[in-house]
Length: 172
Image (cartoon, rainbow, N blue to C red; front, side):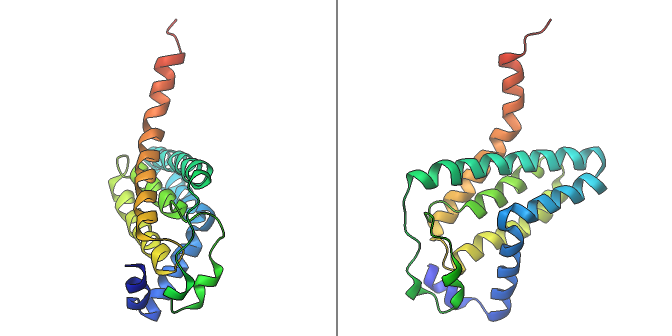
């Protein structure tokens, strides 16, 4: 499937996907979205931005700090990809996709608080997921697992504060 996706994508789509992935590198896209939401979205925007960034932090810790360290999966073979972008991929484990985990975590955490912003974030999040396979950085299963990690990160980020308060803060 990774080979078919790399061969199917037109050069215009390839450039667009690469630009979105570059913006998402290091979670810059999600931090920028958070700044914009906090600035223009009032209280709801600030809550959505905070939830999104917390979810990204959780997802990045789980995907890059834990799972990638345990799963030493090589990247897809370079021969599968007809473009030179495959030369720029990282040396770390392919499993799971940290980019996808962050993208899905941010989107999934924002959507319940501000549905329109969540829907808008879903577009670049999906593009990041497709690009990770198309560029040769990941197998489709890496991206799917990254999405699951992102959903779990969003869930944890939304539930953890209440759990901590109930568990460790005693009413006076």
